[in-house]
Image (cartoon, rainbow, N blue to C red; front, side, top):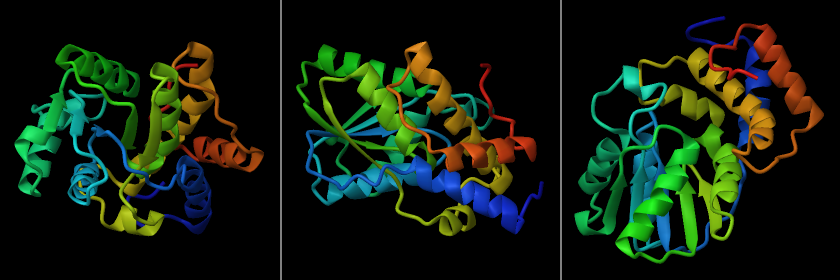
Length: 224
């Protein structure tokens, strides 16, 4: 593996996973924008921009410290993301923060509880996540909160642009690919565990996954 430029074969395999992870759902106005926080602060910028464009009247940030960020930050992801949104012009009174969750399922479940506790009704959501987490976020939301309507989006970058503009220097392109590989594995495993609804994985996408695992991109795999 490399720490900078990807070899052409690895690049093509990774691009296949990148494209699959996107749901490519068109935006519709919603009751709330739910941000699934992570190490990628550009997700906060995308969510703030969507709010400022008028796609929803409320912005919810969900995330404590996860598997990756607990080694990077001491501040909960949601608090950091909310500060970015305020600095971008989102009024503080339009922001809700859930900062205890540590995985995607908890993001949705704890947000559901928060809105219930606050007496807030919301039927439609725009979920904002990393580009390569769109599909798994959709599958998780539909499992945990099936009665609500959800559209998933992410920072609007190509694979090349995402890698070149990546905002966290602690993660290399190889790290990003390993995370994408782990997310694809979870799309296969998690429906049987009750964590997500099933998503079809085309044969060529799974073959790319297997090739990347064989090439050593296995650092973020879950236990089967």
